[in-house]
Image (cartoon, rainbow, N blue to C red; front, side, top):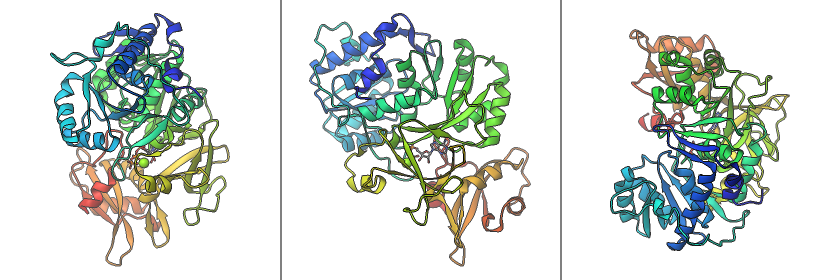
Length: 510
Ligand code: ATP
Ligand code: MG
């Protein structure tokens, strides 16, 4: 798609007039499509008049609000690259991102203003800080509404110019700034559209953060491009989330595994009418097939499916279309149009594996990132000379093209020439009635063999559960090389909000 991202998303907004585009789920404030169109143009004009020029980096530091999409698309329309910042980042973390990205502008919200100021003071180089709302005596993007300044005349080259610079989640190391061009982002929206239509009449609940590429694409850009109504929540709180589904008659939920878990198991769910929901899509971390089915049955929805992607892929490559009745349990979906995939041997990356073979997932297509900002070696390690992005994820495809994600390559435990996927053992451990949560990593035994070690959280009423019982439970159900050799009881498994297990934290402890 050869269109700047703001045109790909809001190009049809003016024509949708009074259709509600964004609803604040906490107070009901609504913006129509005509308003979103007008406001983002006015803010773009205001930013340009304030001195923002093409190529400037603008840090958008905000929880989900109805102003977020306006700030984002105003900035790109004025020619900026938007780097989205975790609203809970400390001033120090924020300063690192400002320095790494050479940001010149910050857009934040009044409750986070002090953090933003402290970050800017540490980093240097920031010319101006705006808030999206109002803060006494402080510049606000709202001051630009109704401006008579002319629309900025910037020429954007969709194939080259970087629209967004989100940071990867930092699950495996330091978060990396990912350069996504206008073309990558706009094309990925178009690629995903036939599989997950979100047009007029559809009501989407935006509870996953917009600052992460998953929320930015699935909950903000895709529905606004297609004409749906987006109900915005600033954070996940189960009761508020359920009440919003009921009140706004939400039709589709895009979530991560911890929310699927709550929907499947939490008693509070029964107190709400969730009958408007037609499908649920989970992504960002492995979702157990049994849990997906439990959630589907409880909500009575036709489909609880998955999608797969990563920040470096703008982000999507696979999705289970809600209309697909034949998706096998546990799949993350089928390859979307205009994208190529290979599964290659973990021992010999030159060897392509056919259906049924388990290996590394390689992707080539227009949604592949331009590169990591300022990290040419990391970029070269990720994208080979032929343009294939090495995802670092292990998967296999069945005869019908459904992809199954096994685990990350780096997390596989190599025991005497065998490969053991920690996520498989974690899913098995969770089937034990006395285990509330579990994580598995590789540790070295006395003979220098890498062996699976489990970190287990005892469930309520499982006070007696012993390590020997846990190892025996696994041993009865898996091939001998997969047996858990060590069990440590812990109070909690370290996880990111997306449900990703932070195994590197466990390794540091080990
Ligand atoms: P970093 O690259 O900084 O270590 P990260 O890889 O967690 O962090 P993201 O880009 O947010 O950062 O996450 C992408 C990863 O999430 C994928 O590489 C994959 O491992 C995982 N993932 C995404 N969707 C799924 C899914 N449906 N099932 C299993 N894993 C998934
Ligand atoms: Mg990654």
